[in-house]
Image (cartoon, rainbow, N blue to C red; front, side):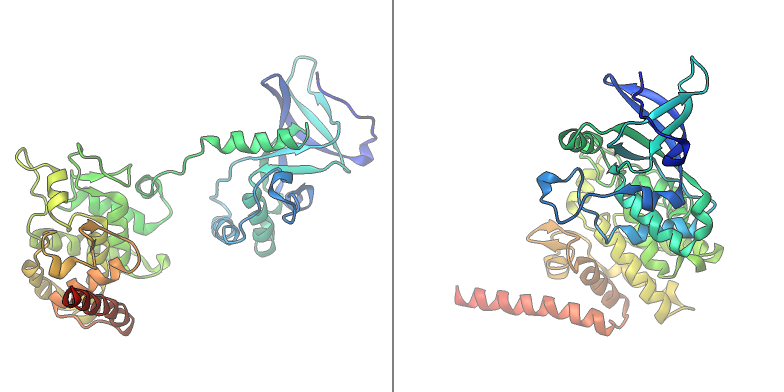
Length: 374
């Protein structure tokens, strides 16, 4: 039975609501206009000690990207419900005696504390400044009756206990807004040897899989190759990406060489060219090639045949795609790997790439000094 508060219609907020029960506790799902969220729903004071807060402090760096998403997609966004607690008695008026749908009246003086979704709430406030037409849109809020700090902290812990961000590959697979993601899917599905050997859901590959590449790795390579704002990605860009990766697939020795006698795990253990760092670097080098030889890049690309992609080729790859014998994508590894590919293709390095390249020279000098001392 819902709790009640004595009030008049002038001192309450009234929301269309659905009443439910979880673990014996009553809760309500209400529909709140976006314009009301910034003033109605609050956060804990960030200066409070962590043990006295009901949720984490808002990470200001996350808020602008969420707000930009709303502003860029005012007619095609999706945002999940907030979860909040109300610290005063509420009154629920069912539509009829047997209905769980009705009207929830919340005192205007009540504190509505966001238990989960504070970044979404902060982003909505920021988005409304730039896109006020969103103000009449609504967001569902799951509202619990406040049972104290300990309960609010437990709500936050329980809601986030099993939260799992989708893999980057799955994000690329399902993203219908990003034109680069669409091109990456096309490349993965149509270009040999990506076709039939790409993992579309996971970012990492198991030892037993027949897949050699990941969709997230291909996306990074395609994005680096095109090197342009999303708004300028067109059908011509898709054709160029398909042609470039098709040519690369024909020129790299060992790509696609997976059969009954050689597993994908064996191939990846022996060669670097199937790993994400190499795919990404090939995209970076490809962008440089297209800029240096826009009309004859296919001929220049033939020089890829000269590269030895084996992991035992330490003079070329150690300190770039490999660190202490292990494949790495940390730090400047993509740039350094791309530098090696560019040099094989006869492409000049940019000033920024030369600065990064100097780090390899420094390491080689230091290593020679250590060897001489030994």
